[in-house]
Length: 69
Image (cartoon, rainbow, N blue to C red):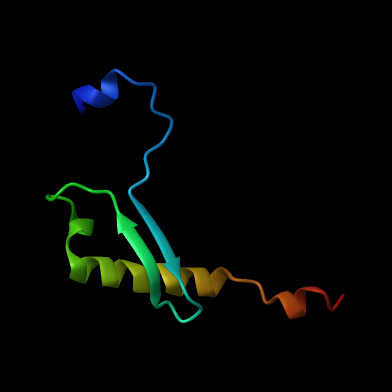
């Protein structure tokens, strides 16, 4: 484990911040990873964002359908 992390009580780590539109296009992104991490590669980042958007869209609830009870 990284010695700087051992000295702290780390609850969680943030590896990236993403803001995507409804079609999965990047509005903002910031990755906090080392150079040897897969997410440091721009092509991998785009593929990751596409997969993330696809999974979110599959689980998303249509708000207009939600109130039709």
